[in-house]
Image 1 (cartoon, rainbow, N blue to C red):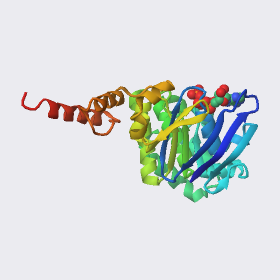
Image 2: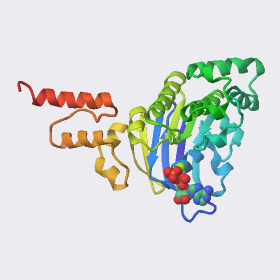
Image 3: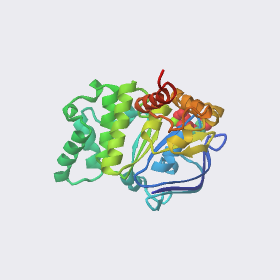
Image 4: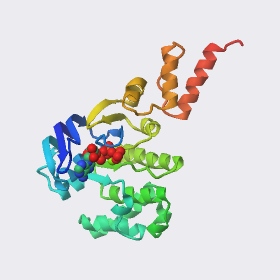
Length: 285
Ligand SMILES: Nc1ncnc2c1ncn2[C@@H]1O[C@H](COP(=O)(O)OP(=O)(O)OP(=O)(O)O)[C@@H](O)[C@H]1O
Ligand SMILES: [Mg+2]
């Protein structure tokens, strides 16, 4: 479990707090989507979970962040890295090897995984995420989506309880973005990994997350299930976060008493919504 207690942080060279008054619990096995405007504090939040704050960035740290029962200030970075796997926005900067297999090997050797276990870990994870055929490929020849899958696999091979990803689909097309989120869902459901993912595409986040956190100016502005959050179109617009059009449509139809089901979070649900309205309103015509 992850717990934030009255957490605030100001970067050493920052003018104001990057995050203020964060109180939050994230349970094991959750899938949390994080969204908000540029500068809202999303990356800072991920750094507080994986210990980059306070171990890498200096600044004023208030309150507590507890990860799996341990205070992040008192835990060493390597101890934290065993619990929390991180995929940073700049994956090219994160990858260290030139061949896929070596990228996974590097982390496993670094973390002291016994040699006889390493081969199984590599083949298992590559199989699980469906990229066995990339094993001997040079990373520089991979597509953005393939690279992202390799980066996530290399982290998951270390078997963390928690996976934190900062905008993993920023440079990907819609289809590859769906694939990455599908992979995250599989890791969440099959391995029980707690997923925390920062993402700008609210529709994608709503489809896959169990819980959404909307950050604004260093605070949590809204939180709840995607259903709860998307019901509040005006609140989202207030801070300039675009509500998916299909959610706005559902809210509008609900206000006009034409629809009373859940807010659709994918095309199938949107189709079902429209179908149900046509059925009720156009019978016999
Ligand atoms: N290394 C740093 N030193 C000083 N201030 C920083 C540093 N990194 C971030 N900040 C400031 O902290 C605040 C939160 O930044 P953060 O990077 O967490 O936002 P973000 O929500 O991830 O934005 P983006 O969507 O642009 O990635 C911003 O005001 C930013 O200018
Ligand atoms: Mg960021």
